[in-house]
Length: 297
Image 1 (cartoon, rainbow, N blue to C red):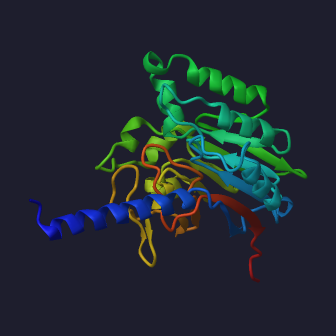
Image 2: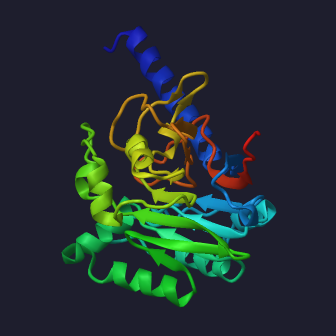
């Protein structure tokens, strides 16, 4: 016969697990906006007050039947452009891509949309022996909708004769390995994007936040990242518990970080995939305002 205390412990554990599952299910649908203001003297006058929505890590999640809640919250941010940080789909053979594609189509009908890859898009691209032509078809459809799909490139965003730069980097698989964080050097970014030159304000879409200092040393003024899903479970006053690369209490989990003159906004993301767990960790639409910082005389 099983001792009474063991039976009670098992029941308590089962009850706790049920509470966590229920709470996480509700948390996954509690979409919120987070407001960020980025100030820099490098931001041109024409971009003073420029509004950006940053989206990442949807993983085929939906807020409303056709993502109408997500679309409504994006509209409320009143952006001039929408930047996408990757992992909007799930890289599994049985996972369709209609949810992110419908969302991108809707957004591209209203705003300029720039889409960079995450590790899930890159996995589709690198493993055609598993996924066939899904990546090429996905990118083709994005372009058909008018989305600018970025792949290791820098483009100019122009307004009223002035400009800022937008870059994206697609990291090699070694930078996503679990348990051990691979060292990244500035030269690794230069191989993909070249060296920085000039004094233009530079935004970098870089899915993995682990390498913020390297992105900053390369020359990015604003880094937009995701990938960590806020650490899945967030302990109040402590932060995220675990990253997708199995880092416990990662240094970067969510929010705003600074190194030198560079800022990183790390979104908690919009969804999840294998482990659909969120506690104290609401899905996020990042609303960013650029502000020209006046030099004091």
